[in-house]
Image (cartoon, rainbow, N blue to C red; front, side):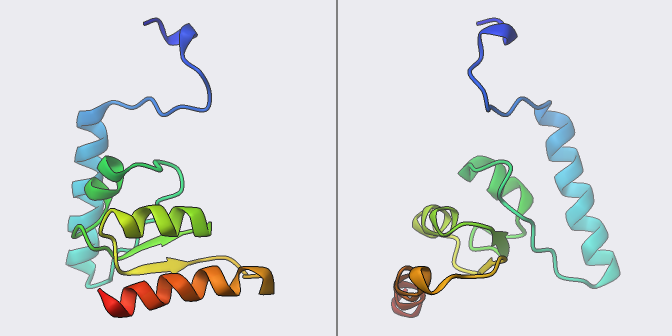
Length: 103
């Protein structure tokens, strides 16, 4: 497949550079004594998230409840929903919290 044939949006990256950058980021945070909580919005995939996070359970940040639900279903348990929440989303967010407490 040619790059011009790809449907957008899609993610194209140099895997080695990406992995090297993720490792550099994790090492730097560790040296500085700060917690790394990557935002998982751009990659939107389990494989990218696993490379970014310090463990398969997180921590991580998301910006939609759909992202939170998907990453939770893949085993990420330490999630922050990093946007304001409207009252119409309370029950959906509460359901995720309930699942987290049961896990």
